Image (cartoon, rainbow over all chains, first blue to last red; front, top):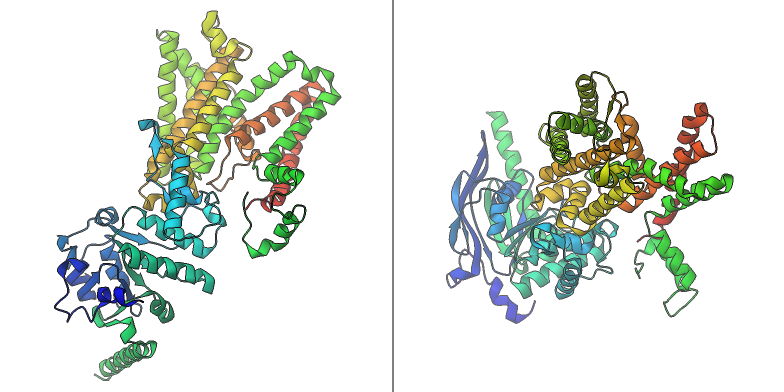
Amino acid sequence: MTEAELPLVGASPTTDATLAASDVVLETVGLTKRFGAVVSLRGIDMQLRRGEVLGLVGDNGAGKSTLVKILCGFQPPDAGKMYVEGKEVSFRSVADARRFGIETVYQDLALVPQLTVAQNLFLNRELTRFGRVGWLSAGKMRKLAKNYLEDIKVEIPDIDAEAGSLSGGQRQAIAVARATRENAKILLLDEPLAAMGARESALIVDLVKDLSRNRGVSIIVIDHNYTHLFELCDRLNVIQRGRIAFDQQVKDTSVEELTKLMVSEYRRELAAGQELLEQ
Amino acid sequence: MVRIVDSATESDSNTRQTPAPKGKGSVAYWLVQRAMQQRELTVVLVTAFVIIYFGIVNSAFYTTANINTVVQYLASFAVIGFGEVLILVIGEIDLSAGAVYLSSPWFMYFFWKGGMPIGWAIVATMVCCAGIGMINGLITVWLNVSSLIVTLAINYALFGIVLIMSNDIQVDMPGQTGHFSIIFGVGAWSTILWAAAMGLFIWALLKRTRFGLHITATGGNLLAAAESGIRVRRVKVWCFVIISCASGFIGILDAIRIGSINPGSSGLDTTLPGIVAAVLGGTALTGGRGTIVGAALGAIFLGVLEDGFNLIGVNANWFYLAEGIMILVAMIVNTQLGTMARRFRR
């Protein structure tokens, strides 16, 4: 990270009063969600800034996936507010969220293995001629796809290769590239480095960094793996019992600190369970 | 040329680079490699084999009259095969195409009998065929019934409708005279030219249009297609409509060519060769992959086989056994060659 990029990821966001409002692309205030008797989210206050990579950590059942489902428009919250670039929003569907520039990348759901790289990049956004006939402008799409991939420094040996013949990392890179091709402002990535070798991971890490630093895309990464999160993220939010329990810049924290936090939470839960049993 | 980057195929790329270190590769090797990359290669080989074989065994095989017979055999296989390619690509199957093929001339006959001019009778019949396809598609996608069962049921239902309408009596087809008949079936090359036109249309649809790309996407990864906003159910229903219309139309042409229609034949005997043509040609039964050129070649194979056995005078009792074995052999060769070819395709 260079000095020039630091202001974007200043001190703890909740305390930084000098932060310009326009820098916050996504903000949630008091999001709650319950499923029957189970309270999943108890008031999530989260901020995501332009060009920032924010990691979401949390044990299973902490509310991490519920939060992501609300952010990508899959589920509405019970209460609380969401703002995209300062404007209050409520999503009725994933497509609705996409209209506000929020794209989600699902690992294996994203690509059609039998279509080429270029065809996948333009899936359902194809360029066509002759109006309703829908004749594909294949050459044009191929060229644009190639330029775009070069632009974001994703190296694919053959733009005409079927997506199914590529490695997991290349497929993930193409899925991310497709999500950001049409000016996505906010990207939700679910375990982007899962089941990947070192070289593969490097490809995705570089892509995520390039998108955030140079293109101002704000990215939320959901992952269990601390190593991955420390590699990818600028800031980490730990979700515990439906609240954000910890919010820290990556450079100001460590794997040890996070582990300690998680273990103490685990101990607390054990103790609470013990008390319940004794009563 | 495709560059090999996978380390697992290191030995392949070594042999490739040996003949010409400057990276051009020998022309012969390039040709072999190019040929092996074509999904239709294997069906080309088996078809060429049967054509040469029957040509040697019986010199009458290459006469114009015989070629004419062959193309009349294969037109329906080809058209139903083209339709099945679309249906197989979306991961479904249509067993009712043959029944549509057999029942559409009856619809046309009764529209004509009811007082419609012949052209309008054809149009009305095509609307019926589209309706049958729509029923197949809607039940499959909205009620989640397997298309295998839906279309099999429709196959029997159509057979029943023909028996009821016709009272099990054979009738003569209208439209046997004049320019009309020459264009619609009676002309020696009429059916095959229509089949070729439909093949070209469906090929362009599948490989060159947005809709075709969505067909492949729907069959290749249904969730990804749906997630990207493609209306996958609508795509599927349209494919069922297309195969029904194509089968119905070639059915009318064949009926006009033959001159009379008989209510007693089973639709599956026409559907299954179409499916065989598609699969022999290299279309996957598992969805996502299909080739129209392959289906055309598969239909040629089946047509040549049927005609060739007749020509060399195979005993009628032996006919189906011989045909069954030949199809099996062709498919085994196809699969084995396909495994070999996959090593060249990267």
